[in-house]
Length: 137
Image (tube, rainbow, N blue to C red; front, side, top):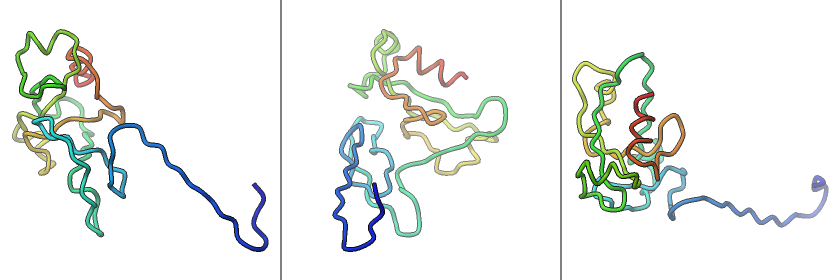
């Protein structure tokens, strides 16, 4: 593309995003609550990031001190271990934050949050065994 040296150039910019609709201007993830309901993230406050997206960085070796309850991704009320361990996609919901751990160092990390990414990779669509293996690494 040659530089514009006179006049004006009309440009059409199209963005393609995989996943559910999101009206958020700061490109955070779709909010997915523990009960399975989804909603686009509300616009972030002018001085901060998305209030519904939490990114946590654990830097110390060992357990990070966060427990998870696994639920059927399509039916979040289903937590029967025999049913969710059959290979169907599951979701991990924070169930506990242990005292005196790395997890406790993050006050917004609370029970009820749904895990969406680990080391930048989505966990959506993983079955129980695969998601459990990702969390164990």
